[in-house]
Length: 177
Picture 1: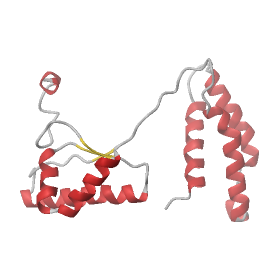
Picture 2: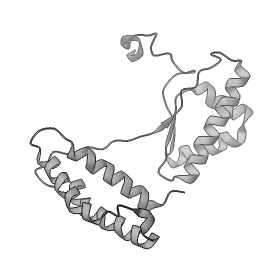
Picture 3: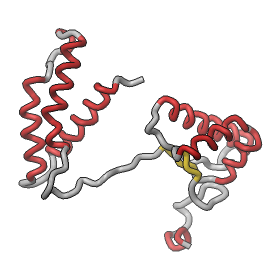
Picture 4: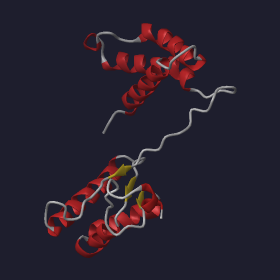
């Protein structure tokens, strides 16, 4: 499992670096740049020369110093919120027999359930009713795992299609209807 401090440090730093690169005379970008300049002296340039405690202290201090760039304050435009979901487009018998698709679905959905065990924030969306029905019929343990995760709100059977659509064939009008 990932170290939460290291994970949060990497995501925070990557976000502040992206904010600092915003174009033009942007107040938010200037604030991010200022926070990065304030945090730079704390960065351990050669992690091999420091022990784990020193590195962890450094990461915590850097996160504190770049935190103002991540804050939403009055007067600034909302940065919004992005949701990321797991999904797998499962083609039914595209270049293989149906039995192989059933097996691929079982492996894919079992892995989604395993990821949910490892990462409590992980969610998955499935967009084929047939594949869910196959799990009910051929892999009841996986199906029960899916049912439990649906009840938690972390696994979402989505869409009104029996099998995955080839969205590049149909037009937008047909998809809407």
